[in-house]
Amino acid sequence: MIPPRISLARLPTPLTCLTRLSTSLGGPRIWMKRDDLTEIAASGNKLRKLEFSMGQALEESATVIMTAGGVQSNHCRATALTAARLGLKCHLVLRGAERSPADGNLLLDELTGCRISYASASEFAELDRIFADLSIDYEKNGEKAFTIPVGASDEIGLWGYIEAAAELATDFSRHDIDPGYVISAAGSGGTLGGLILGKHLHGLAGQMVAFNVCDDAAYFKAKISNDVAAWQTRYGQNVPRLPINIIDGYVGPGYGRADEHVYETIRLVASLEGIVLDPVYTGKAFDGFIQELHRGQFKDTDDVVFVHTGGIFGLFPHREQFGNSPTPAA
Ligand SMILES: Cc1ncc(COP(=O)(O)O)c(C=O)c1O
Image (cartoon, rainbow, N blue to C red):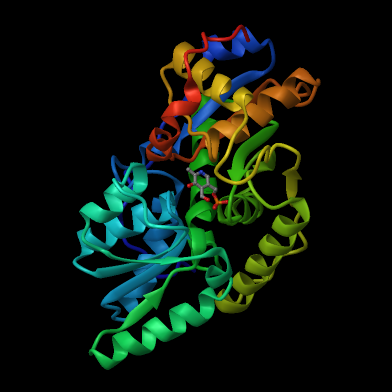
């Protein structure tokens, strides 16, 4: 049973072995699932989820897509670009204040001509009410609004990484590997939630593990459990209780902020492999992964897969944090 879906991402994305980095870290072979290459501007993990969220929106004859996130939200940027591609209007509710000149993801949001409302942290806490009010306004103007939640992490968006798990299973057999771990960043939980469900449904090898880049492990366990429960209800499925593995402790100074170590890790991966991570999600998670490797974790397997979920545009607003520090030794 597959819900409405439209094709947006270029799939399958490559699964690449990072040989120089693996040698320099002295651990298992590190593979990267290049979901940063799902597309060019509307890139990253969100595009997999949006295939289903947008599919549902079109099924419901929506004319306006509403969603929300931080000012540098990758999800909002991917949604605005995708809506433009589909000829739909888009309204973003961004947490924070307007920035001028616009940079990174916000610059791309603005290029699409989408409507943007800014909300303070306390206003953002009332997001459901904001969406409800906006929907009524749009309806009065003859439009039909469809709301995609933060990060497209709900029972619909889960399908993106359920299907990605099937793709990974094919990748593993093509490369003849049996990875012990599939690692990702958790920001709103839909990527890990989808992988967990997808592992169960498609028999994917390895433990699905995520490093949270905000909140804490308890938050993500509850969020993913709720999304999986809603998925079962909506799609009439029944799955047993599945393990949710979150490695907490690498949020650093907070969401959207990183410590020096993360910037050094980004530099290391770029210099050894020519692959660009970002300070908010993938760089923070990868840095956590390297620190755990140095503590002796993830050594009980020959192969580990890191899912590169995109986010390159979020790098540029952090340009000043990179300073001039040289590439560190691994
Ligand atoms: C680049 C990037 N990587 C990872 C994540 C985390 O994925 P999820 O929100 O599905 O937990 C996000 C969004 O939150 C993201 O934008």
